[in-house]
Image (cartoon, rainbow, N blue to C red; front, side, top):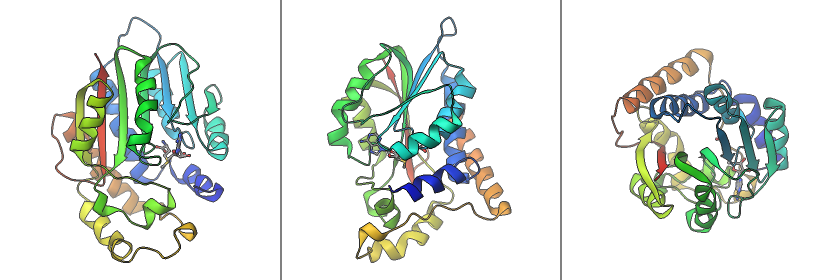
Length: 254
Ligand SMILES: C[S@@+](CC[C@H](N)C(=O)[O-])C[C@H]1O[C@@H](n2cnc3c(N)ncnc32)[C@H](O)[C@@H]1O
């Protein structure tokens, strides 16, 4: 992703329905699953981007250690502005560096798809090895290979996943599966329609593609946030959604 894409992400991610919905599901899941209340927590966001998920983790978990790494210095500049107290550093999820010996929660949202699961798995295992027993890994990943479109090219994503593939990924990382579900279910048909032209006719010059991220008009953004909130409460209540544009998963260290 280029600098402009990170600047755009930093500007919209607080309000934009899609990012808001993911944070809402992360917050609900962390509150539902709970973590030992008798000690201070260490939390890491692997591929933290421009830092809004870190801000959420700080709000929900009030960890003693809040760390985040990303490949992009520009993303880290934004993340540092949003999270002045966090330990932010340049790093690669394929061979991650850790600044603490043990972690309670690791999040990684829409990152493993960039290098691809096969090349990221050794690094993911390294991260999981630092999780304390009972610790959690939360993943969000793009769904369905056939949905690959100009959006994926713009964010340099090379792989999209099924729920089954993500379940396997948790198994490969030696985690027990707490949750695997599709998400962004209700508006999924509209997303497919919007992406159809670039699914059928991929851009001839992938390097020139820009992402389609923009905050819709206020009313539409509120409606979309409301829809995702309804989906998230259904997932929180135990429902698993049969399709969606992302797969959301939680694994627990045994
Ligand atoms: C789609 S953004 C998601 C950012 C953030 N996790 C979020 O949910 O808003 C993908 C992020 O992964 C980062 N990234 C890509 N490949 C990476 C790698 N091998 N190691 C670490 N970060 C990587 C990119 O720089 C970018 O910030």
